Image (tube, rainbow, N blue to C red):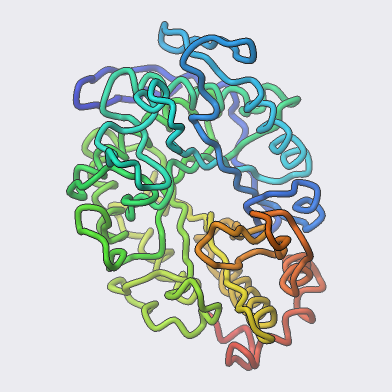
Length: 423
């Protein structure tokens, strides 16, 4: 039993959480993961970690409908879209049945339904809607109630109490919140205010999830900007990741600390250049502008700071979204694959990192020209698979006895004589 103090600007109360499932967080045989598009293919690739996007707007209904169900949370009735839930089950169950640790990425996509968006999206999000994802509505009692109800529904359904639906072990709250202008939009707002709003969502999530699964994990989401912020964006819309993390930890402690972890996205300096081993803005010191694949040890070391520890131990890191671009020339596929070999060897040496969840499974035509997939997409489609790239077979061999031989080709490409030269 755990007592948690819940703080909002308009509300302060204490609740008692009874963890329904007390299973320990699983140990994984390796760190290989994928943001899954094709479930059967992902399982065939031998992944041990998966990430799936969850649109809370798709999950919720604002009134009862023929394809909805009622749920109750804190004495109020809410409505869940059954077909959306079935689509989640169809992905989660086969993955978890195969021994994959499933993580859900909770997102507030604008739905263009005014009634939904009024509950789901933070009222400070830009009125013009020119962003991909908004912040959760932690500004109103109704918004927090709706958010809590949706997270509790997911947590209960995937707690292990219902094996027919599958099991979820991780929940990533929002996306790249330190660059909120596009990925967790709160309009123009000072960093401390953004962190305060985000901390409300994370704390609510921890309580809702802990009620049904004591040892499931909740993660904060950051991009690769560490001691710098996204260029060309207002300092009221984008912030240094390190400062955001430190401020979050301080605010969480002030209101009663709790268990949270970090989901980092260590893309290369230049997302269009797969040669991450040459990143110039990835230093080996805390003041590094970026944390990319090249300097992951900086993130692991930073989490050892006393003020960031949880119960005397560093909070865990997963790499929940990152990939390498395949250049559109004859070297493209080889460079992408060589980059993956470098990344796998680098991640394997970081004791503070639990998972490398690759992005993408299949190229996506709405991703700014980036070709990050293990699969190429069919011409003229958004993300319909065409053929696997050179990286596909190498990815499949990661974490197996075939890896060492398969990855040897990459050493001269990345400028190493041995993988043991990596930290």
